[in-house]
Image 1 (cartoon, rainbow, N blue to C red):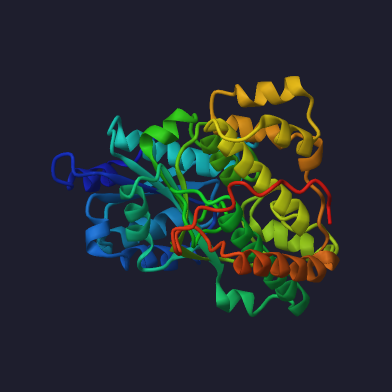
Image 2 (tube, rainbow, N blue to C red):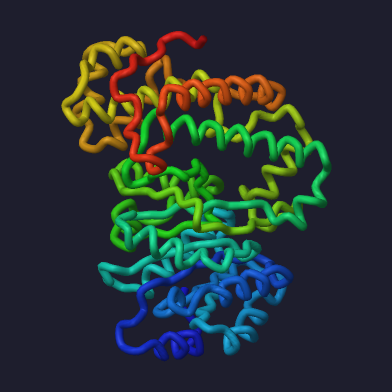
Length: 391
């Protein structure tokens, strides 16, 4: 796939080697929504837009997404590069489209060691400070930034009330679990306020880190989570930024398989379908974060491996293999296969009970003076024992 000559001519208007960022947007039949996305990008600060190009990959379209983009290009305050592609059936999904778009964007940056790749969705609307917030997080030392996504309020208001209530309940519970993690295992490069979301609607990554993990995983769904998992395996510094905010579509008629629309339709059809798989019962989340903190200390030469081994139900040999892993990310991934840390399915009906328990756990930590890292410099409970029972 190649950018059209007109797009390359627009890129050549950048002086010398001024291109520092390329924002990749995959799009499929998004002529109705793409203008709002491009207008939102045009509203980013001029300082952030300096040296930034946007690459739109229109794949398998039946509408005039590409024509509309090219018509808007002359009036935008950044070069808009357009690529038409017909992805084969095995790649014509959300993950395949994002991988193709980001690979094309990476090719434009060449070997620039300071190059930055970003991605959002064609039906998303980044808030005005989104680009500047991403660049600021990278300048502060992050290798990659996972931005915060918020549902488009106009579309959310059109969802069935039961689905709105469920989404709101999950969001409240997720925020409580994020608060527990910030207190129990504070991470210096990812201080509070942070979140646990990994969404293709808001990704920023240094070019060397993107290439170090082999690019965007070519999977049909969950490519965003798989990408951040790959970055974690090499101990990339991932910042979960509350300042890089994007409004995302919550319509039910999404174009790409594996996207949010598909998830919402499934939940509408089956109200008792499990909640987001990153969520789990409160005590299980407590145990998981405490185990992560204990592993982090062991990797730094602190603590007794037997404590973590017994708490997680591991044999001595398995614990030694985990501690010998070449990166913390790989060690943590291996530890999570331990019997005590296996994921538990959480159903919507259990959310009120687990939410109340998570609030009580947070209150107990606050009474103990364990504020989130970044709020007052607290470093978390380094020596409190791991819980081994559920309650």
